[in-house]
Image (cartoon, rainbow, N blue to C red; front, side, top):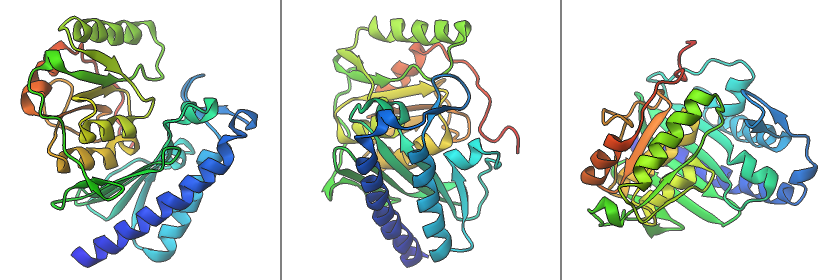
Length: 280
């Protein structure tokens, strides 16, 4: 199936570029767009999110009519979020919608492709930066054709850690988020950063710019593509409690090596959230 999956990946890259142009054309007027909310007042969606997802899914359906889809906006509209063994496109049309609305320059189209519940390729296009991150299982990770490699740093005290605050403002959740942040900062690490996009944060790990990224409350469409980009760049993936990564658990820890990952996992005040496939 190698050639078929390569054809699918080539199509994904072309679609990401086309979708990226749609986003770039819209970003100047992003603050004029009708901004809607989903799970909370800060979980945003725009007409551009919906337009891009429709563009991607329609094009893929024409070329690969038997394939399945998990799309952020489709799930928000009521479609089930279930990952089967079938070839499945996992799509975040705009990862970093809040960034898009505010013209903060980290906005990505994320397209992962899974077969037998295993991600076979990942495409993350940071469209305002014109940086195309790609990975194919067993064939490495790249940015604009340049090979990617994670940082060689083994001492977490010399590390930069990426994380986000998420969109849940329940006081108990906020307390745990800041408890983790306090413990990570107090290791001490060199710094804590966040691009406002899970996909881009994972690509920063793959690029060696940061040593690790963790978050609780993200979704499968945020991390599917980025997870393969990290692993193909030599990084490691796990749950925030140190266990195996489960794409549907809405918890992720990506790091440059096992030592940094395990140290970081010990400092995270982990909590459970509703799984992406809970309703399936």
